[in-house]
Image (cartoon, rainbow, N blue to C red; front, side, top):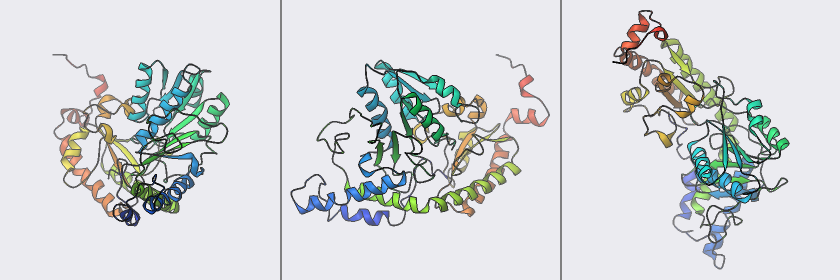
Amino acid sequence: MDYQSTTPLAPGVLDVMMPFFVGKFGNPHSKTHVFGHAAENVIEPARTAVADVIGARSKEIVFTSGATEANNMAIKGVAYFYRGKKNHIVVLQTEHKCVMETCRFLEHEGWEVSYVPVQTNGLVDLNVLESSIRQDTVIVSVMAINNETGVIQPLEEIGKICRRKGTFFHSDIAQAFGKIPIDVEKLNLDLASISSHKIYGPKGIGALYVRRRAPRVRIVPVIHGGGQEYGMRSGTLSPALVVGFGEAARIALANMYQDSEHVKLLYKTFTDIVTSNIPEVVINGDLHSRYYGNANVSFAYVEGESLILAMRNCVAVSSGSACTSGSLESSYVLRAMGVREDLAHTSIRFGFGRYTSLEEVEYVAKKLIPEVERLRQMSPLWEMVKEGVDLNTVQWSSH
């Protein structure tokens, strides 16, 4: 139940990868012998398969080690190329940790960053976003599907604003790629970050879409070396990972509608059981503009970590992003949405995917009912609520 953090390999993906670990082990950049040619010949078809998912051209896909590198490459690359001409960046307060840390790094390097707030449903106010864009804004970065809440941002409207304002538009589409329709032309996307292991492909590989049609995007490489990947990302490609990524992309594109309907059924089943049997629960994020493979739920008067620990032997869930799962702090994404600190601490993210069964969802939902009740019985606040006390009216002593 943690499909936002990663996914298992789709059947058939490992099969296409295996030959490139053993017999076809050549370096795809060694073009003077058959081993190198055998490896090189599988790179471009895989690149095309990734491009097809988002309506891009194959030469606009640059392979990376994953979406984190792609996000760094997009934001830093554009910022450095236009340094001295445009020194302002716009991102949402709910962006992925790697985007936030990249922007904080650039602030230390002299760039100005505007962290745009979101509404209580997790969606950005387009008027607020537009007013944050200045003449010297070089790039706007907005995640397609939030990894913690599943909220889908209005990328098409944002893309129109960016094009009208003359600034580049980047999106971290790691949680959206292969799951919802993404068309880089329709959305006016200039850069987009992709991850293989979110779509039932191998870990350790991702991609950055870099627009080559007007307006063409120019970036300064983050990794320098032999000039591979059109000079934008040096380093030897792994044919096994590239082939696996390409196969996973092909499968995702072919199964997108089926997968979408499947997780929608799972989401409805799960939330219906939970909300009808457990009082004082909140589903975080907009209930309509969302990806249904993600259900971020707050269970009032229950510590989220305690609930996770209570189920850890039979259910795999998380309290938010896998990148920050070791932190005991409440989610900065939920805090940015205005969720109360105490309620943010009670949130758990449930993820559904292609291989999650209806029986598994029903099992987890029904297991939550007694566990939440048991933990609430240990909470003095829950006792007060059951007695009709409005906790907002209580004057708490500081002693």
